[in-house]
Length: 293
Ligand code: ASP
Image (cartoon, rainbow, N blue to C red):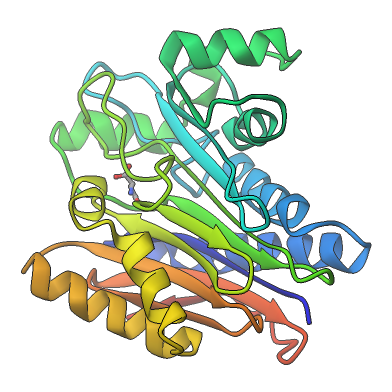
């Protein structure tokens, strides 16, 4: 059994961007699926899927990320191996286009699980990652949103992926520019194991999206894992986790994608929308969708 599911963020997804969300999510799911079929690992698949979403300016990650209160890009990304429970994550990182690959390198080459800001950048340079000009990651769309809204407008367009490979290894990955208009140095849930993401072989994997502060307060990814551990299949675990989240934090904004150890997938959200796409051995339909639309 092989399986991949990706998300393009939970929040307000304006109707005019639904098509680019569906397309970007479908492309990422297809890429991850190919990787699994070519013998790649679950980690390879989630990294490839998230890289493609980081490169797609429709999403708030890598190129096209949301801007901080200072009009700059600071990226968070995390990846976790269900085989070892090792994570690799970077927070508040500037000047690199694909933070998910730096996170993967940290997972594989370091005892640390999380590095932030200048420390994350120096690790990336030491590992041979090419820096880019910070301005090159800023898109016209994000500049306009920044200039017109000039206020925190909620989460959205963050990207994530979960995969199960032929060896039954499972992995999770997330990447984001975070909350628009966030304070410099703010790190959200996306790089934090147990909050934004989790993966454990034999149980499943979770990738969250929404207001990072709400997700961290409730430890949402780990709570969702407990529903899988209690024996719920992925769709039921997704619903149970978001219902529990809403009981804990009425009005809280979050969404998640989830995969059980059999490769079954699910998603749920308290936000108006969540975009996603998936492909499993049992279901070859890879059309992207916007839940809530
Ligand atoms: N969870 C992300 C953060 O708070 C944002 C998002 O999912 O859109 O940084």
